[in-house]
Image (cartoon, rainbow, N blue to C red; front, top):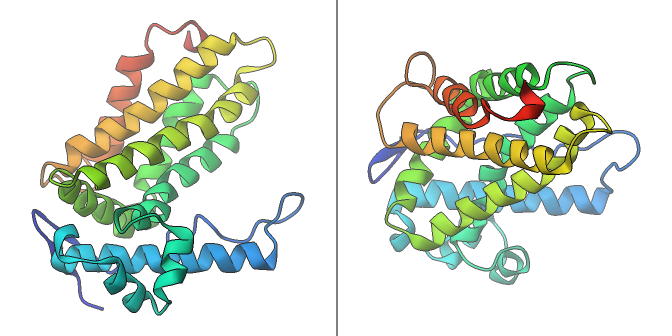
Amino acid sequence: MQSVGIPGGTLPPVRSPRPYSPQAGPGAQSLTERRKAATQLDIARAACELFAEHGPDGTTAEDIAHRAGVALRTFYRYFRNKQDAVAPLLAGGGDTWRALLAEEAPGTPLAEALERAVSRSLTGAQAVEEGLEVTRGLLRAAASDEALRAVWYRVNQDSEEHLVPVVARLAGPDADPLGVRLIAAAATDAIRIALELWSATDAPATGPGSPAELAVRCLRDLTGAMPLLR
């Protein structure tokens, strides 16, 4: 598949970031849940491809359903509108970075754990080769599409809420709940702001001006005075 353009940016072939891969052990997804997740991701990829080719204004829900190979009623079973369809792909980055943070051992200095997880999630081969350019194209399109911006903000809010228990586990049972919430909010905003700033430029995905560099800078500025990170 060839790369496709979007007004103000370029998207590479859209591949699954695999945030919905089958889980092992307790809490693993059932076969039905995995099939639903796979269908959602197929629709999300189709939406991104069509937004890249025609922009949000030139794409309909019917177009997306047709590209994904599903019925229109199936599209609306999962998504409220065409912009909402990109949410599974946008959420994939948050899923990845929370999983990396969850791998950190309790007792690891929290500031160190946060920076390492943020940097790893934004410099991994899959993020650099696929996810970041897709995100850049979508964020550029969102600049002129209020509904697409709303999806981006909602995805970040959801990510922040899911981040709270991960931070709480690393911070320990005696950690101040307010401090835990503030760290979750700051870390989420650090990545969001970094991606938004980077998407408005033509900076590379790695090195100076990259999302990883910007996110670590934002994280340090936003959390430098927080007691839990001292």
